[in-house]
Picture 1: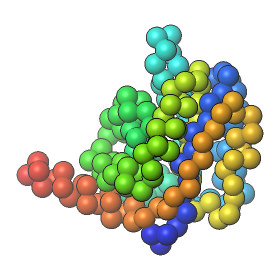
Picture 2: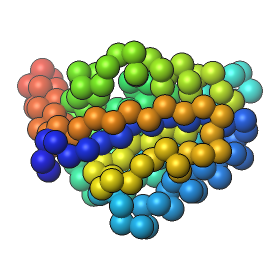
Picture 3: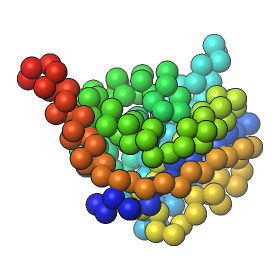
Picture 4: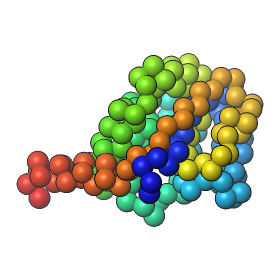
Length: 176
């Protein structure tokens, strides 16, 4: 993948879980239009204790080594407790997530990451989206029913290398 491939990290809040699920369906449906190489989408909703939980998620990048880690890494950066739980539940690629977390952390301005984090923590339900190579398609109109939204444009960089390097470092430190 070209390191300059466009990538978007977006967060949006909704008045209810049902509104977020409806938005999830709209965003997830956009992948059928062939406008995205890879897309990961998650619905987050607050539980009875007011803690965000991943309600549902999906990814078109599951077949790639870093594919399952892409959304988990984004969640680690913008909603650490939710992201760490999601990554831990994902199993095997846990070490590689660190490389993608580092990519997000080093390529997206901290104030923008903070904006997404505050946004999704403030609402009752939220959507988090990572779209790689959106081919000119704007994510923003897909979030038209959101109460608030933040869409961050960045580049994918070398996700394969970031993932592989993090795995190698983890293996070297564990002696395997």
